[in-house]
Image (cartoon, rainbow, N blue to C red; front, side):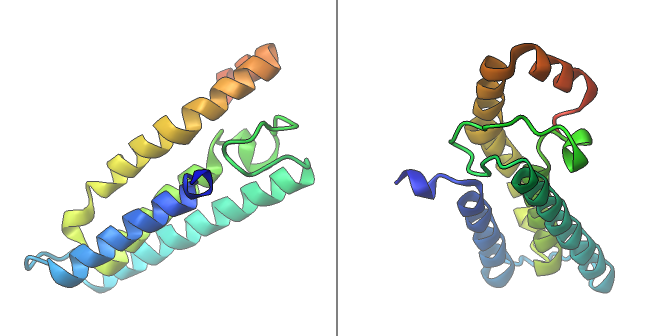
Amino acid sequence: MKWIDIPPVWLLGAVVLAWLQATYYPMGLSFGGAVADFLGGILVGGGVILMALAFTEMRKHRTTVIPHRDASTMVQSGIFSRSRNPIYLGDLLVLAGLILRFDAVLALPLIPLFLWVIEKRFVIPEENRLRLKYRADFARYCEKTRRWI
């Protein structure tokens, strides 16, 4: 069951809930058509780019992208110099963009709920492992790089 507890599964669950809401319970609400579609596409594209940049940087440093495993290296370069969690930030952007594209107005609360789940289940435990393993280096990294943006 541990393989199910990964961020893409949580993201997929939130996306499916948003799609179900838009498809079966639209309640006559809408974000406004073409503008929402365009902004949604920008958010999805931006999220995918963030994730790709982060994966590339992590591969370059030969460390894991699997959340529950210990990192062999603390990556601070590339996109990680701007955000400590660019993959999770990318997930959040993809969710927000798809909610806009689906016109799932009532699914908007999924965004902060998803953020809360990701932070509690993945971000905080990962940062705690890095804090224990890299101590002063991680403290300096936290001082110069924000958790999200």
